[in-house]
Amino acid sequence: MTSRNQPSRLKTFRGCVTSGKRWVFFIYNAENPENGQGKIVYWLEAIPLGERHNPTVNLELILGILRDWVGLNSGALSYLMFGDF
Image (cartoon, rainbow, N blue to C red; front, side):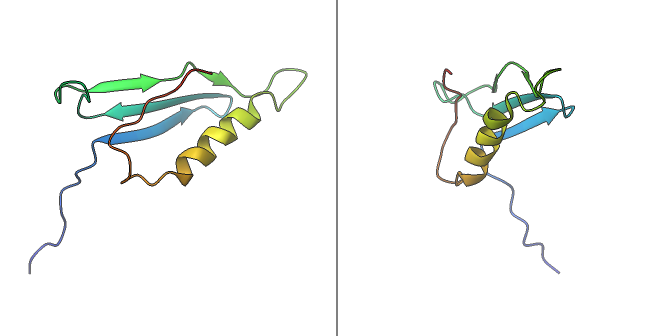
């Protein structure tokens, strides 16, 4: 029996860590786009979801980032970076 599993050649991973109330989005590049070596992590400061008087504060921003990332074709980009808000 032969294995058909191929090693992943993805160089960029994106993700999110959340407690449900605070969201941290990150991008991990396994290869530095400037010199082809090293590893780089980009992240946004924690985004709080909701406030005492308004539980939906930042909800549109968080959903927008998630929607944008789901809509990306992961094979089409060689590296990703966050822009300024």
